Length: 417
Ligand code: ZN
Image (cartoon, rainbow, N blue to C red):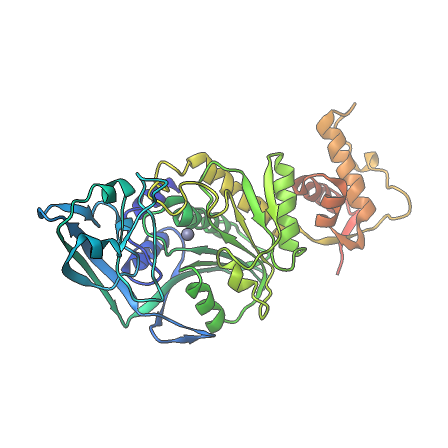
């Protein structure tokens, strides 16, 4: 994951253009990714696919001709989606096109102007303060022209055509946690799931530009999604944070909470709000999909967010690995959550006779296993799912699933229709 993040970090991505294509090709080297192109001007619900933006270079020269800001040093220096410009202008005029963070004077901000044609530069406030009066020269060597919107899609077919959606945005330039961490964890998750001989669900991974990408996908595709998560901010050292789907009590909401509770680590939970990443579109009332968002520290709540400090030092391998494991555990719940019927419902069956008491005297884990067997037997009336058993018992889904497997093996359970 760190390799992918490091390789993709220098690329100037945006909602369209070659930066996204290059990034998707890096993902394609790791998983079976289809790269889709949707032409500029395509109508997608209330929106239109915009012109394609590409950039080759940009700089500001001070009155002495020295470059004081250069796109080659950091692609955040250009207001993302800037129209081309090459002119000379006095400092007072130039300042109307400059963006800084006065309270974080050593950081470069990340700014965009997708839907209003503009040009501008983002720079350290310290640099801005040092600029002498005089005539400046600016160049932005960009193009904004008819082309297409590019996104990546990876479908891993399962026994059912019903799908689990995993969606992450790919439209941010050199920002690691917001953008690249989601890309890296989702790529690795797809690799892990692809390696399995069998999947209950089909899995659809979308690597898309934020907002316009999910709107485009929803407008142009048949939606067969039963559960979904929007992934982002998965490499910072912060605790996990789950934002529920609009439905609030969907299976995905319960599955994520069961996994986070079982982890024993602190985590945050929030109800749905119509703001944030692409869950805004998936949870719009016309779709109302069961899609939540599982992140570490949410967008906007860490000081490095949308600045040059969201860099390679900010994302940690342990954090990425923990995020991958957590997503895998959630997929494990979705794959394993079924309903069963106890075939010996009149009083408890004799477990010892069937070899289900494996430890004599009973250590702590032995007692937990025994209790899990009793919970599964008790609630397996054809109505309750293993996730219900997990919630009611306060045990981990993995232990409950294991107990159900042991009971199936000795013929005490059957799957309910
Ligand atoms: Zn962002």
